[in-house]
Length: 397
Image (cartoon, rainbow, N blue to C red; front, side):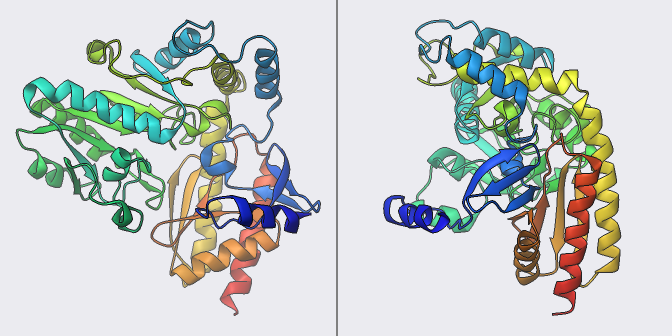
């Protein structure tokens, strides 16, 4: 059965993906392929299905809303969008929210906000970080430091400059009278699961205030609980001028958003930015169910406890296999194994999959470990055991 689907994919899809595992069903932390093989999922759809696959509260909300009202466009007000905006504002920095459909759209909108904010001042440049990832539209690609995916689409929009991550002096040196903002991820996900330091984030906030420029945070991967706080910035005792979000916002239903601080509420005016599908009743119902579930089930505390346990266990494995794992780093349930080589990275992902555990890679030979928040401690141990067995086999090859 899988062969038929893969042949269909090869024949009819644009060849932008190389996936070869056909998954047909999911439940919480597990998925199954068409042949019935079971896998423990430590990818969560790249930090999307944070509540696990097919969470009953989200499924119920989607089904109920689908029977009521699916789409009306933003020419009219739906009953769910304002409530979701309020919930996000109440749980963050009490800003104003714009809804869209993906992380790239959210970041694109946030870049447009910064450009419009700086227009009258002659400020349009945005300082970004080395090893950053903000999306694949032309604007967000220009803000992404990943040459392999940039070069075929150059020339890209100008006005973006890259500096080393966690280096406040580099940011300060890059600011000029045309700088509008600094844009970064609290934890660089695609770049190799590299957390910002608390000192750096606080110094960056102070620098932006002192220079009169904006601090923009890409919370697409870190948002909605992945780090143990609802939003990654909350680990640093700061507030941004704007932040983007997507991925975990609706547990798999496509959605994105960005929020701007209330003091900037009049920067984007009617007609300056818009979308047909952003903030549909259906998407907003799913996202409200996600927020309600995280709060009701105290999942942020679960993420902090399980994250500390998983980090400790994986660091123990790194101590046993130092020739394979150079470092284990992360925060909450956003953890990366810095492997010694690309070969070791690919070998661990492949070996673990053969044993029924799904992992994923990132830049700098990193293997990402992103289990859902709803995973049991026994399932965490099962995944750790598979990683240990895989490392043992790779070590003896």
